[in-house]
Length: 435
Image: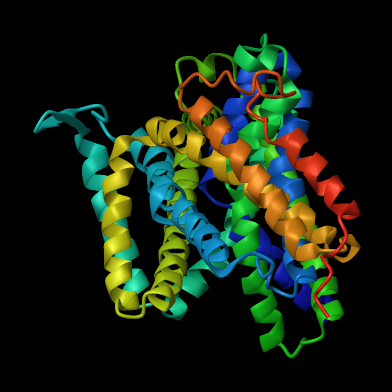
């Protein structure tokens, strides 16, 4: 591949990851972390940049078959879980909500008007917007063509230029004084930032994107595993550098937001308030237009990918039927609201994320294990076991049985047991077969 090809692959990988969560979580985390922002930012960068980076590399090292050591039912269950999380359950509806929060809400005269429907209170503007947004997503998913690719090729450079301008403005224009940290950021900023990075879902996405990039490399005639790994690493480094640049600038934006962050529920509102304050109506219109279109292309990509996956898993149901179904599900779920959707997603991510992290790490150790199949299954089983309890705790239920485990109170009870099993498996010999 030429340098231009490699850069193109890197920017494409960056565009894959540059979704809704990348814009809304760093400003909010930066505001809450306050003076402890540097440590929170480091923790966030580990899970939102470092782990997706090594996730892509792990997929390349496993030759695209990162779940091959698991039983068929377990591999299928994990893949289904990831596709549901990054698809209709959380990530796809979130794109519509971010598009609404940044792209539409600032221009609506009465954005908080409520409609009572059978005991449910629904935001009228959000209800209409979500069904229109995902109606367009459904049409584009049903009739995919070059239009979406061309829009993406134009949008990504524009969005990058806007984010560069935003980052420079954050550094050049004096902001407010950095405030005191709040909540868990007061004492455990590093761990809190690490767990906050789960919300981007990028480590989960890296397991799917890695396979997609390998397929693209094969189409370019690069079939040798070592060459695929080399180019995928280069693309991943380019993407990770871009993501780190975006995250760091947005963390600073949130930490210095001052009054612009007063009373907000999420980072999308901080971002909109900042752009409106510093760049006026024109800046708000530009940001809202590009973010809306970027969220639209992301949503179409997610709905299409999920429809592809599930139509292969359940061939009796067609791709088009799944596309319609997932679009309707996304439009419905989007009406819980952005802040509420984030709250609902946290227990699920606390359960599944440890398994994804463990899978990435254990893949790098595969060749050192005497019994790699047993090692993969044991490590992921432990990660899931303790991840379930972390998820239950995040949902607000008391789980006292594991209070003695380090990091349990921070929502990372899985970390030490999983690492211990990972190391122990290095010394477990392969079972002898009968003669």
